[in-house]
Image 1 (spheres, rainbow, N blue to C red):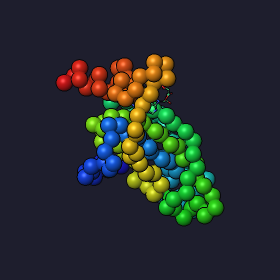
Image 2: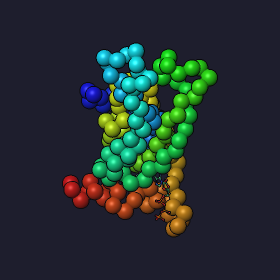
Image 3: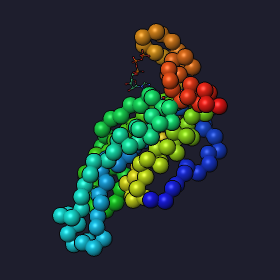
Length: 157
Ligand code: ATP
Ligand code: GLN
């Protein structure tokens, strides 16, 4: 699969210190042998989409806070899905500081992209505040995670 990066952003509006990167990704990848189109249903091997592939790629770049949920979606995901059927997808939500948005977006694309219709979409949403329940900390202190990307990148810089 050729490497694709997000095209450069002209800036996020409205401006915020934190953003939620919300990715709706495919859950299943159909591996279809070109030689047996007729027997697609038989030969096509469905394998569960590797949520772990995305989350381990994020972990590798120091992103430790991730929320995943099972969702059902409807979009331009190909004619093999009927109009009244919502397709099972996975939603990943990652709240990060502004300077970490692009690397998270590119990491998700790299790990989740197949190049087929239905790969999904990523939304970047401003986040007003972060509050840690255990301590009541807010903002920067609450968003930062021990051993997280800001620790990792500042120690290696
Ligand atoms: P602490 O140990 O600092 O008190 P905690 O263990 O109570 O924190 P976390 O485990 O850090 O809380 O977070 C709770 C849940 O919130 C996580 O399981 C995850 O789903 C979600 N979460 C935490 N941080 C983020 C983030 N930056 N982006 C998305 N989801 C997050
Ligand atoms: N921005 C946090 C940090 O650098 C990490 C946030 C996250 O893992 N989602 O510590």
